[in-house]
Length: 78
Image 1 (cartoon, rainbow, N blue to C red):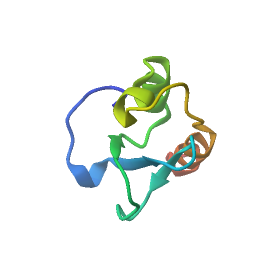
Image 2: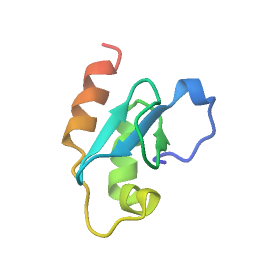
Image 3: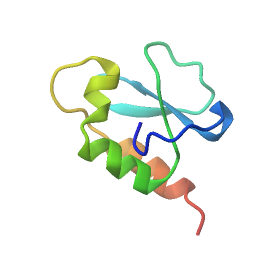
Image 4: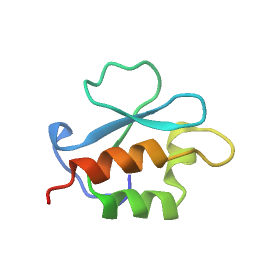
């Protein structure tokens, strides 16, 4: 979504919407429409800047990405 580069599904993080909030779906089992993103802060920033989340989930208005940002920052290699 962010950088638009192709990658294996196993290398990407699935994201779903839960009450106007983007949340990571670690196991890929949460219900609803899913979108995939590289688990990198750079890719997340690009997706937010391009307003890719509302388009991908077909919703009106902005979505909260704080929980997703926290997860990606924690998962990033030090």
